[in-house]
Amino acid sequence: MTLPGQVKLFEVGPRDGLQNESTPVDTATKVALVEKLADAGLKAIETGSFVSPRWVPQMAGSEAVFGQIQRRPGVRYSALTPNLRGLERAIAAGASEVAVFIAASESFSRKNTNCSIAEGVDRSAKLAQAALAQGLPVRGYISVAAGCPYEGEVPVTNLAPLAQALVDMGCYEVSLGDSIGVATPGKTKSIVETITTVVPLEKIALHLHDTYGQALANIYAALEMGVATYDSSIAGLGGCPYAPGATGNVATENIVYMLNGLGVAHGIDLEALVAAGDFITRKLNRRNESGVARAMIAAVSRQEHNQID
Image (cartoon, rainbow, N blue to C red; front, side, top):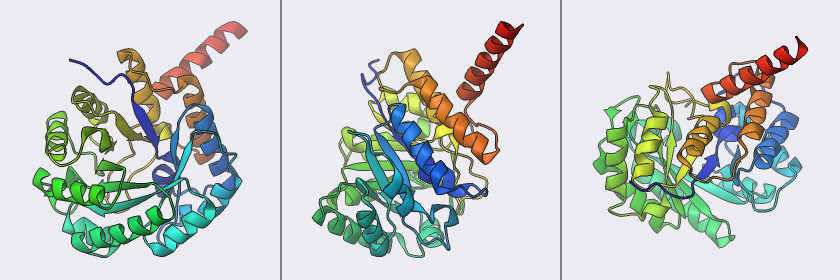
């Protein structure tokens, strides 16, 4: 078995992670989080979303966040763009790249974007064309790739045409989202096998939620197949506003710890990452969902206590 020698983590905490939080997060905190993540070594950070604040109030200040961050060389600051108005705002704010999204089930597509899958593909194609004309790279998401909260299991045969459509419209990468966290290693391998019939392996990313505690196992299964890009969220923040009961994305800290143990390069400082997660969870006054972070913070606390004694 040969695992990838290098893995890229695409950090989605500042957008996908924070958008579900009920506690309002001010611009200064969002800016500090993005900068701490970049300082920890993350090179791709989903910094905000240009959606209507009526639907996602937490993302209302994305322009200000993009305007105030101290940008690090070599770091890409991504924005989710649901429509042409959102794309215009992302361009004006100076996003490094944009993301478009479609769903793998009709019910989720209508609940999430108020359109059919076919209409969603057409909308994304127009967005991608406009973004590419401005010289912006475009990333594509497929939501509910493993299961839908309204329809149940999503057949893997639904996925290949959608992935092909995203690549054909110019997306440099296709992120397959297990939005409700129901995938198992077997399902993950089946999804990857299906997608690689139409999309090169190097263009595939996985976006996994940990609702059933399977995310790390699924990542390991995908690593065995050569997948080298994974979306993750600091402190396991996140969920899905249109998927009741779905818990957060797989924690960035947990993936980095596993990759360290496997000897797979990633370029991220785990201690700095844990500090970033501790920062945002304290601001949110909520539990850190990364078991690795909780253990490392507890170990430091014990060490400091012993030194005092």
